[in-house]
Amino acid sequence: MTNESSNRENEQPQSDPVAVEQTPVERMASTVYTQAGEAADAFRRGELMQNSQVDELADSDDRLIALLSYVTQLLLPVIMPLIVLLSESSKKRPFQRYHAVQSLALVLVFWLVFFAASVAIGILQIIPVLGWLVGAFALLCLTPMYFLGGIALMLYYGYQAYKGRRFAIPGLTSFLRDQNWLA
Image (tube, rainbow, N blue to C red):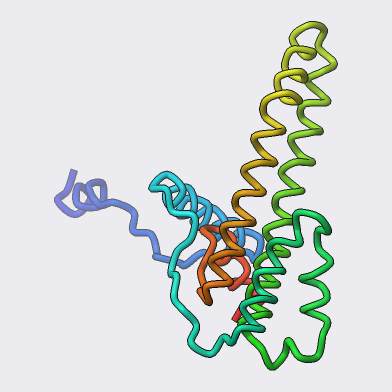
C-alpha cells in the first residue's frame, strides 16, 4: 500500500453539519417536554407558583375580579373568566385579563386530567375483581383527594391574586405565554 492510500483509509468521513430544521409539531413537543420537566421540578420543590410579584397598577376592583376568576371555578366553572375576557373593560385591565386566562386554563387542565383518568379507570374496570378494586379505590380515595387538592389550589391562587400578585403557575403559565394567550 502506498502512503497516500493508507491516509485515505484512516480518514473519517467528514459530515457536513447540516442543521435539521424541526417541524412545528416537533418544536411544540420539545417545548412542552422542557416545560413539563421544569414544572415537575418546581412541584418537587414545593413551589405552587413562580415569579410572584405585586402588581402596583392593580386596584381593589382588579384584585376582586381576579379572586372571583379563581374562586367561582368551584361552583360555576368557566363562567366568570369568560365574562371577564368578553367584557370590553378587560382590555384596559391587564391584571384581570391575566388571572382570567390563567384560571380558565387551570380549570380546563383540571377537567381534562379528570376525564382522562376516568376513561383509564373505566377501561381497567373491565378486568374482573382487580378492576373493581381499582375502581373502588379511585372512587373512594383518589377522587376526593383530587377534588380537595383542586379546591385548595383555586382558593390559594385566588387569595394570591387578591393580594395583588401576578404569578406563574409552573408549566401552565409558560405554555400560555408561548401560545400568546398571556402577555
